[in-house]
Image (tube, rainbow over all chains, first blue to last red; front, side, top):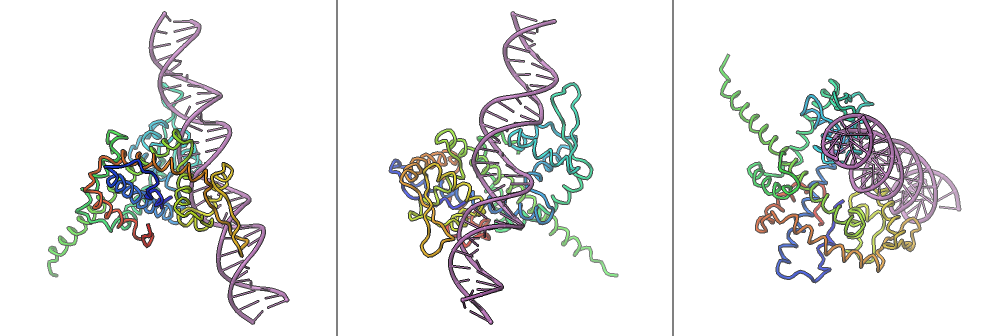
Length: 166
Length: 166
DNA sequence: CTTAAAAATTTTATGCTTGAAATATATTCG
DNA sequence: CGAATATATTTCAAGCATAAAATTTTTAAG
């Protein structure tokens, strides 16, 4: 969702000195949100019409493409930063579609490793190529020479959540 | 046959630069996404623990707080950029909770206006005050003097989606 | 006036997402 | 060993989100 402009109305009178900075950050957040939602919506639409799939499925496949031997369910949910139960559902459907396989883990019957099938790897490669192109054109309003700087600023925002393993 | 290697070299150099720019944009997108998801997750958590509510509900209330006489359902879904059916469900629950009222529209029995109740306005004001503080602290890694510049860059990304009414 | 087309909203089917509870297996320690 | 605790995953209930179909009402055209 976007357009939280009402938030900028001065509904409370609690702020004094840092009011301007605070409002500026709020406006920045709203723009950040708007830009992200816009790109996300385009990606969803492109994945849907071009590959009959979804962003969550793409994200799972992307994570598993990087780690060829696969990941345990808990590792997957940790990498994607979503709940365990969420991953279970998405993986279930990808397994049904022959894109993923579940492999028992030796010496631990609680755990399962999830891995892309060959078909899954091939499908992902096709999607990833398109995906890069979509991003490239969606972000082409951004000067490449600015990218590093912008990147650093965003790093500051995300920093508190992780130790930045990318 | 003439020697076109200079042209080929030039061409491949251009391709290489484009490829590098493309990868840089992709990395930027991943950071943008990460930063946004992080802030969103914090907001959700704060709304949940502090006010027992959700971000979608907050977004609906914010939109309606801004337009005091209320909005029609279709206007609301358009402002929030979500589907009609989505808004129906969220509004249903907010009405049940006494935060919103549905008001018939004169001369058009298809449409409904949705408006915050007084209780709704008061609840929103309390939440909005906290919200600004949360954003302020979440974004405090960003130098205020950089905010305008960063903002402009983000504007470029979102530009294609709207005519920038925000 | 009557029928066709358009508009506003809701419903439906499906999938994503979460937090919490449940299940099953492993590990630790007295 | 055996009980408590920890870990890995799934299940569950509720809500969010979409696209497509259905419903109701309005508007337009003949």
